[in-house]
Length: 482
Image (cartoon, rainbow, N blue to C red; front, top):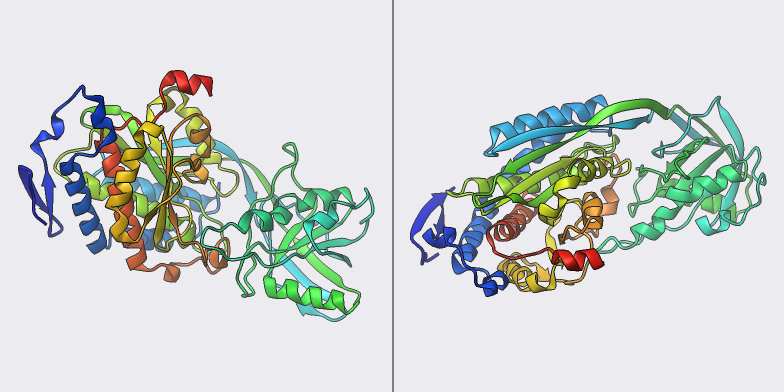
């Protein structure tokens, strides 16, 4: 690479160009719509460095091996916060802090589930988050529902003494994960209708696209802050297929189950925050992150150890430059995402007074496959800068997507609702729901090469956003009107 600027250096063997002009200020508003060549040169060098770096993989390997599964609110999640705090202190961040909050803790406990009629067969199941325990060993006939829409039509008390089973199709695979929402309805609200009908328990086909006997767990929705009073169990896709075939043969089915899952009272969780303090505008924050907790069936490598590693590694590579970017870069490792975005909501509440200074936010929480698309939702006057970022990361195989696409990631939802502009780097999610919330979410599913591509894209995007003059937020008067 040829450097046209005044200060050059080497980072991990890669030539990085830094301009002596980066400190210069200007009143020319046109500068907010373009990216200075020196900034692009440094971003390009960061990409080169990231593609050769193994830092992201080392971080997710450490998290999944040294901590393991990290159920929200558990002792393991506390160990993850301790791990993250030590990680931040060992890297180049200017500030490392833990921001605690209180949350209700749901524990999985034990589970037995099996088919007892027309014959005995063990089934592979898992309790869903918020499920109640069974008060005793339960055996009851099964009432079959083809879809979640079918169970919505039952009368109150119609399922007394029965176990409801909601079938449906395995989730449709797609690059964007678009099938998740429709498939997820039976997990989120099916229990409300089963319980209204008087069912002793609800069993559902797990929300996932795999054909393994690995059931997917996940959180149910509350009903006006009331949770299920019956056990709610997801069974694997092959087991759900088996029950369907028996139903189609008009076989009478009975299930036996015993579940020990239950709420355990309030506990302490927390968000871990890493800051690179901006050299010119330290109060303006570009926020990135992932969530530190995971479900407890696997080791949370793909969901979301990868996101923790990608965003932390990207910020660390920026931290190794000779100058901090103009704005502060903040990495937030959110706690208790899986059980209702509790860390995200706590962060938004704890930082409510400074949310107007959050100029851009995004999260990595869709696995570890390669990024293929950049989307955004910013002040239209700043779209030229996002477009410039898109051109900079084109060589990573990333296309520029919609410029009016709200999002940023699950943990960014409370920030976006408060008016914080967002961007999103979309990973290929075709196989994500084969692993998501299952015992199969383990480190061996992560490609170091794909992870490095993610780190490279985040490093370039975040550096340019933090170094540029762009006003990503809408003017205050416009925000007020909206």
